[in-house]
Image (cartoon, rainbow, N blue to C red):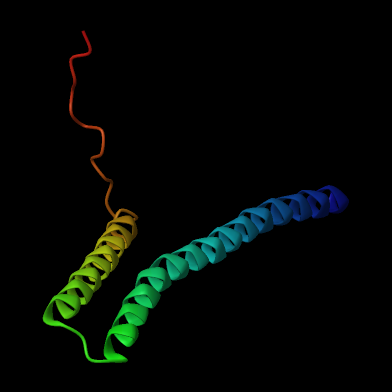
Length: 104
């Protein structure tokens, strides 16, 4: 009986550890992807600003750099909004597919 109990407990612990390990792998991958997605627009923004500041430019060139910078900032805001939506959906269900559609 003790042996059976031991074997069952080992099996259950092993199964639980598999799920925990999968979760940590998912979390590491997710964090890596988020970091990459946020780093890309920041690097683009920084590069555009650094190049623009290296020498005197025309008003149109400054405006173009500002437009590109604003586009990258909007991209980061969108990414963060999506990340917040994803994080908040853990605590409340998302109503993604609640609308009825006539297919005929």
